[in-house]
Length: 120
View 1 (cartoon, helix red, strand yellow):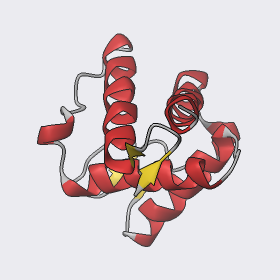
View 2 (cartoon, rainbow, N blue to C red):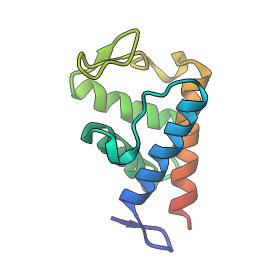
View 3 (cartoon, one colour):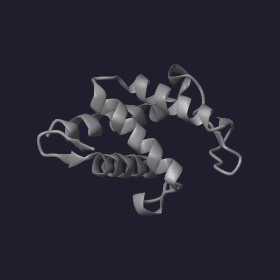
View 4 (cartoon, rainbow, N blue to C red):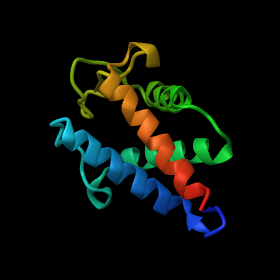
């Protein structure tokens, strides 16, 4: 899907949003995020779904988390103290308001990247 006046492909926006998220995670000491090219399909798909959400309208960061949370639950993930793709456990499987501020920031940043690129 092509988005915006500059016709930026959805895949390119998802890639940029993913890489910005990866850089933010690294700034927090989380070096577990792989580069886009090395990311598993479930992770790239999650970024694409977030792009779809934010290109359909002006939804806030909480909507990003709700969409992500629904996807994770639909795929059988559950709450766990650390992110573990093998066990399908993730510490962010909680309501948005219960996320630590640095985790909420990821949804604000993702939304801002998508909005900036979709409006070009």
